[in-house]
Image (cartoon, rainbow, N blue to C red; front, side):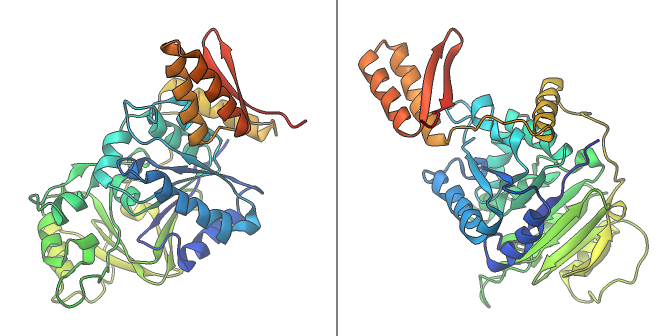
Length: 375
């Protein structure tokens, strides 16, 4: 029976030398030529979202080339478009992935596009069956039980508030809120940009708006927290530390006198722990940790599809390669051309698709793409 994979959360620096150190450890434990699916959704509103995720892909291909990773960008940008997170063809690589990555963009946008989506359900199912989930920046915030709307507060000036997040850890009994860029100092001496650009004073007010019995986890810059479900521990890797604010057993607290953390701890009747590089803590410390049975909490058809893909990979069967986003876009253009009976344009698009190494077949149920066979 498969066990859930690792979940890795970055405070920042996922594509830096420090990020490479983390991914080096992860990829060394994955199968050779592991399949990596890079989910584009958090940046899907940006006109250059393909380049945003493309830079992450280049990091894996160039900086971790010794592992020969097979990298696929999953262009699940926006619902109601040809690049929808509910389109089975777009999100299919998630079911084949050994590692799924999400990163930069907008936390609020990511939550809005992914909540109850096929992409999100595929991610959950694949993780349940052993895939590693790596999250950075906006994605780290979005998977919280409550997501911090950073841009709305920091850039637009909206009143302090939280949004319901994707609650990735809720199914494991862990109600968690993540704050990356915990020790950020981009503002220098003039502006406190710690606590993910909120600043310490504003962070105290934000904490008073959260429900009780949550664990808040602050992730320093260039630092990662590795949640190991098999060992039932969280491990810290990086230059900084990980700060836990939670209710739980008594302990020897760090020296917090005069800091906003002391005020928050008193306000929430909680404890504060700070863990550094190489240190770890038990997951039971931050909630009623448990591993769900089978596909509990997932749509049945999603769980069946995830199991079929997993069993196929375990049996060593060839998994059909998923076409890149550019080819999928050409296929959609051809579908529209055929719909308006523009056969000249449809034929031209067929040749353009073929030039990129794919062939299209018209079937009673629609177009089907296949990788061209080598001659």
